[in-house]
Image 1 (cartoon, rainbow, N blue to C red):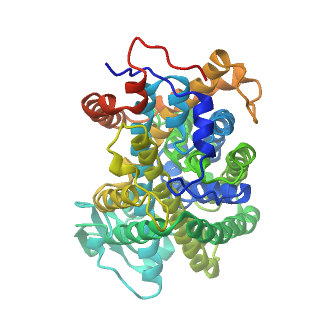
Image 2: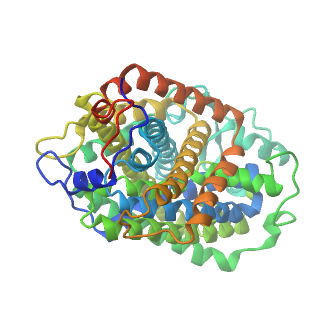
Image 3: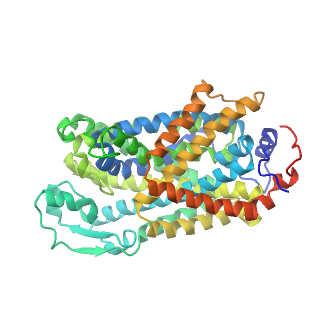
Amino acid sequence: MANPWVRKSIAGLKAEAAESNEHSLKRTLTATNLVMLGIGAVIGAGFFVLTGHAAAENAGPAISLSFVLGGIVCAFAGLCYAEMASTVPIAGSAYTYAYATMGEFVAWLIGWDLILEYMVGATTVAIGWSGYVTSVLHDWGINIPAQFTQSPHTRLIEIPNTIAEKLHMRHGWSILGSVDKLLTKNQIDFSTFPQVTAILNVPAMIIVALVTALLVVGIQESAKVNNVIVAIKVTIVVLFILIGLPMVTSDNWGGKFIPESTEWFQYGWSGIFRGAGLVFFAYIGFDAVSTAAQEAKNPQRDMPIGIIGSLVICTILYCLAGFVMTGVVNYKQLNVPDPVAVAIDAMNKRWLSGPVKLGAIAGLSSVILVMLLSQPRIFYSMSRDGLLPKAVSKIHPRFRTPWITTIITGVIVMIASATIPISIAGELTSIGTLFAFAVVSAGVLYLRITQPDVERPFKAPFIWFTGPMGVITSLILMATLPRDTWIRLVVWMIIGLLIYFLYGMHHSVLGNKYPAGSTPARP
C-alpha cells in the first residue's frame, strides 16, 4: 500500500529546482523582485483596513504593540522559512518543506491549509479593496448602489457629509454596526437616514477577475506591475507617518496607552494579543515569497534576502503607522473600512485623503496579486506529486504559468469575496498562516537533527531557540482567535483528510514508488 509517511529527499528537490525546460516555471525574479513581492503582500489590508478594526475592538492605542508581537513571531518563523527556502528552493512553500522533513501526510495537511490561507487571504483583501474604491468613487461623485458593495445581509446606512465631517466618520455609506454606537453617543437620531441591506460585493468580484487575468498572462509582467504599485503605496505610508508623527497627542488615547480590559480579549494585554492575531495575516508576505522559489534566478542567495528584507521593512512601517493612526484620532472611531482616511480627515489634511485612498487601492491590489499568484502554485506542487489530478499542474504552452489552477482559484475567490464578511475571512487567514508557521519552525529543527550534513546556504541563528520559539509563539497567537475560527479550520482540514485518503494517498508518485515497509533512497 502507499506510504503516507514517505519523505522527499533534499537532493531530489534540488534537482527538480534545477530543471529548466518547457514544462518548468520561468526563472525571472531577482532578490529585489522578491523583496518587493514581500512588501507587496505585507503592506496592504493590515495597514489600510484591519488596523482600525483591531484597534477599536481589541488593542486600543496599543495596536503598535500588537504589530510588535506579530513581528516577533514572524522573526522566528521568517528565519526558519529563510533557511528552508534556501535549502529546498522549489515552489510550494511550507508544503514542500514539510514533505522533506515530516513526510507526505503532514505535507498534505500543510498544503491543504495553505490553499485555505491564500484563497481566504485574497478574499479578505478584495473586500477591503471594495471599501476603498466605493469611498473614492463617492468622493468623485460616483455612487455604486450600496446593496452591491458588501456581503449579503449586511445592513448599511448613509451618513450625511456634515455629520461625517463632524465625527470624523467615513463619508457616504457605512456598515450600520460600525457606527450606530458612535451616533447614539453623540445623540444623533439616525432612524431617518437611508438604510439598505447588501446583496453582493460586486467591486470585490471585479478586482479578483482582473488580477486573475493578469496572472494567467505571466509572472514577469505581474512582477513589473507589482514593483510600481509597491513604490506608490510605500511612499504614501511613509508620507502618512511623517505628516502624522508631529500631530500625535495622548489626548486621543482617552486615558492609558493600554486601555483597561473590559472583558477577555477586549483591551488590556489580552486585547493586544487578540489584536496581533487579527492583523497577523498581513504578515504572510514573506511566506508568499517562498512560494516563488522556482521562479527566482538565484534562490539560494535571493530567497533569504527577499523573506527577511520584506519582513524587517514592513514591521517598522506598521508599528509607526499604528502609533500615528491612534495618536491623531480616538481609536474607537477607527472601526471602519478606511481608517487611514479617517485619520487624515482628523489631521485636517484633506488634500492627502485622495492620494491615500488611491494608494490604498493600489496597495490592496498588489496584495491580491501576490495571494492569487501563490495559491495556484501550491496546487501546482501538489498535483506534480500526484496528490491532486494531473490536469491541475498543466503549464500554459505560451505563457508558461499554471493557468488552470489560476482560473479555478480566481473563480472561487470571486464568489467568496462577494459573499463572506471581512471579519470571518481575516480570522481564517490568520489561523491558517500561524499553523503553517508552526510546522515550518518545527520542520527546520527536525531537519537539523535528522540531516545535519545537508548544504544550507543560509542557516537560522540560534536554531535551538529560534525553532521552538517559532512554534510556541505561533500557537499562542492561534489560541487567542475565536472558537468559531477554530471550528471552521477543523471542518476544512477534515474535508482535506477525506480527499487525501480517498484520492491523494492512492495516486501519490512518491508514496507508490516507496510503499509502506520499503526503504526510500537516502538524500
